[in-house]
Length: 213
Image (cartoon, rainbow, N blue to C red; front, side, top):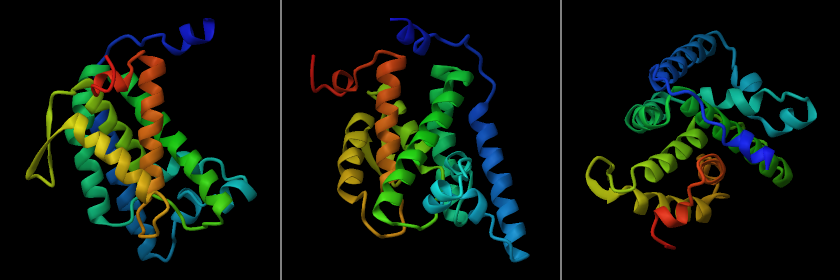
């Protein structure tokens, strides 16, 4: 079908350090957050994902901009560390254009799905952070490097495929937990990454993870 031919049309391979550029953009925006906060301006109202504002005030850009905002230093530090460790490896494999599309699309779709769910549930807490895109990145890493080992908390060695399966289960069980963490966004990031590699690369994650032959 033509639609699948279009969806699967590959980009020409280039490598332009997009992962590092994303880190730089996130850091600059975080510094701007601090700058405006010191002056009593909370830019999360306009650029964080606020489900009620998104649907009722038509602030549709929020499903994109939310992923560039962070709550504190540790939040952005660990998110950007993940982009550095896993994003660079994926970008080298995918190419810069493909990686940028993957990162932004999965992050945006995770934001949209999360916004819809929160709105329907009446949850009006602002959502910020790159975690939806980052969980998609973790998933892609497990697909592209299934035999690699990830050191959880820098100590515990876990095969990447096992780790991502564990994240699927964990985020599913905790996705509506009220602990200040957007577990639902993590889960949707994994889901959209699954769909992306299935449609774009024709890779069946169940086969990669050894569930089917």
